[in-house]
Image 1 (cartoon, rainbow, N blue to C red):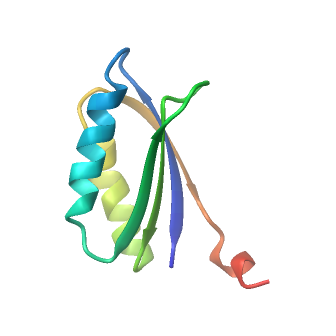
Image 2: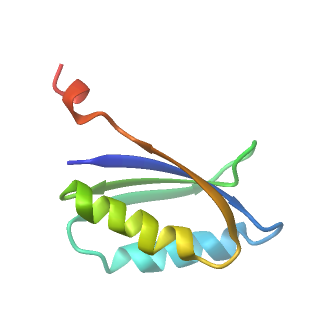
Image 3: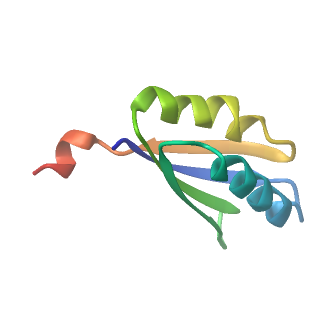
Length: 86
């Protein structure tokens, strides 16, 4: 399963609202597993998504998560699937 870690920066004080939106949005998606956490540091929120295929994963990131209001920026790290098998 393709996996991505998405680091998000949010508008000041909006992290809980964004976390709730992400959970609601991803809860209805078929073929994925996800975790969402607020964090201290340079980024405000970390999302881990496992999807049934890479296209589905990229679509969720670009068409849904990145379009949420009050998300200032994202950094996406896709796991190298071939290395998981070593």
